[in-house]
Structure formats: structure tokens, C-alpha cells
Image (cartoon, rainbow, N blue to C red; front, side, top):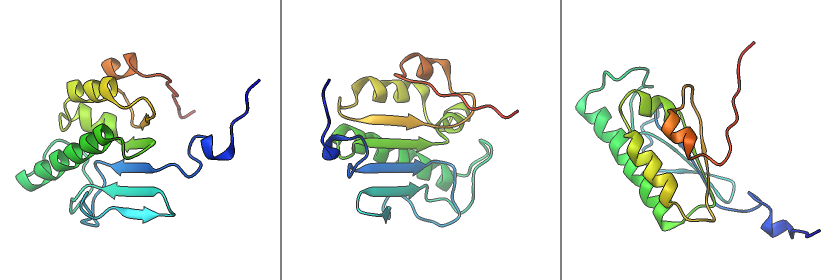
Length: 139
């Protein structure tokens, strides 16, 4: 049996990035992450509204593309131990984030990094490369 020191436990003091792709309304953007506690950076897309469909204007499309680039760079650079991508499946299913780029990001992420993706109807190609899948259903 092996024991982990508290500093080795996942999430205990480790840097975390939480990203919301489709929730706007506060004009935050990746340029202004909110620091919650010592190690949690929270970022919403630089949108004036919440997105519910693929009917976006040019500024909204650009904001999502810029946030996706920010996420990819943060993952490649290994800045975080955990990255949470909220509403990712919706962004992919609406055609706002390319599914192939998500799969490539997973395949090429640093080994120390864990990723959590949320949203309904996660594309099968993403599920196929996931280490663990948790499904929550309403009853």
C-alpha cells in the first residue's frame, strides 16, 4: 500500500482552470480571468449574452474562437493540473468548436493534466478517448 502526501492529492492546491464557453453577460473574456481562492482561474467567454444556438454575429464567433485558442495554449503550456470545460459538448454540437481539435487536444495534453468536459450529448469521438465518463440523468 502506498500513501500520498496531502500535497500530492489531486486538486489540493493544484492550479485549476474552469472555462464557460457559452455563458456571457459579464464581458469577461480570457483576458480577465477571475481568481477564486489561490489556484482557481475562472473564465467566461467575452459575450454580451448567453449562447443557446449557432446564430452568432462575427464578434461572438471571434470571442469563442479566441477563448478556444486560449484554452489550447493553456493546456499545451501545462499551466494547470485540472482544466474544466463547461458546456463543451454544446459548443462542439453547435459547430463553434471543431470536434477534431478537441480530440487532438486530449491526445496531446500533458500527462499530469486532468480534463473535465460537461454538457449533454457529448460527441462519440470525444467519449472514445475519455479516461472516465460520468453520465447524469434526470428522473
